[in-house]
Amino acid sequence: MNNSGCDCCSDKSEKLLPLADALEKITSSLTATQATEVTPLRQSLGRILADNIHSPIDIPPHRNSAMDGYALCSGEITEHNQKLQLIGTSWAGKPWQGKAKPGQCIRIFTGAVVPACFDTVVMQEKVEREGETISFPFPTLADKNIRLPGEDIRKDEQLLEIGRQLTPADLGTIASMGISEVRIKQKLRVAFFSTGDELRSIGELLNEGDIYDSNRYSLYGMLKRLNIELLDMGVIPDERRAVEAAFLAAAKNADAIITSGGVSVGEADFVTETLEKLGQVNLWKIAMKPGKPLAYGTIQETAFFGLPGNPVSAMVTFYQVVRPALLKMMGAGDKKTLRLKLPCNQTIKRAPGRIEFQRGVLKQSDDGELCVTPLTGQGSHILSSMSKADCFIIIPAECAEIAAGEVVVVEPFDSII
Ligand code: AMP
Ligand code: MG
Image (cartoon, rainbow, N blue to C red; front, top):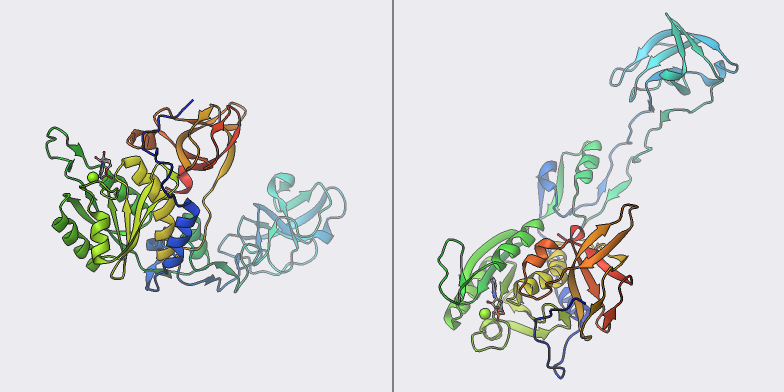
């Protein structure tokens, strides 16, 4: 049993919006940035590709050897222990330029051009050499140990698509085509701040009732991983005028604003009220746990996301709602996050009604089988659970109990972080 649920969700009469509906409403209202820039290849890591990439050349560009060995005509060795005369060497980057006559072969190294007069390569370990005479123990077949031009990528083939977030392998692949610069989407600018009179920044003293502002740090990390340009606006007190001034400054300077706290309907919660005054707002109670309240709207042209203040709620809402929205704004293509089906090795009992993102730890048995264990502290204030966990266990809204050993859907943090 694992349900310390401390978000209050007792009011069954309130209208909760399914998470999928909220996501659909948000992503369909947002458009991808059209602004692009050209950057040296290395600086494009993690950025969003703005042009399709076609290879201007065949890769590999030439027929070359896959082995260190001997290049020859396969028709010459039809019986055991036939011999050929060694007449030259083809090195990687220094092709052999000679002409072979019947009865001759050359030494060849991995990556070296296979001269047109030869049709096969025999591995060096398989032959015997005595001076300039090479003895081949077995008959040879054509086309062995030869890499063909275009075998990896053909000339003009489109390999990478607009919207791709470039990986280390992509950088290498683009370099293999001889391309030095790529067109990418410009970085999104996101302004973010925390709201709450109780919040102190690191370095300040805590008075009674104060806590350190952690959301701005987890938000910083999550945004940084998306390669976003950040505008950290600090902590804003629960005062109408201060919240309003922060909203206006943020809207002027950013493509999106993210706040945390103050989106409930408490007396000190000015976020939604201010958004209503300055722009357009939807305050949704999303049927998800943790992270029920979410404010979404616009101020002028700027998208606005008001996250709940509880630290786990803020992170879960970011990953499940804001991240896909920002990816759409960044021009990233639709890439599904990895979700696995794995047995859960503990019973989970809970109140049904909201999709839940429990924090879990993946375990691998000695024979390699994966399973997941939910952490014990699942309250939306237990931020350490996000550090201890390496995945979300996603429990469907209607599910009231998961029996130990039952298969659950798991989202590894590695695929979203
Ligand atoms: P609120 O959404 O403003 O009602 O806050 C809900 C809970 O989250 C309260 O316990 C707040 O103290 C806490 N909280 C709000 N903002 C932050 C923050 N930036 N860092 C850590 N805790 C926060
Ligand atoms: Mg507050």
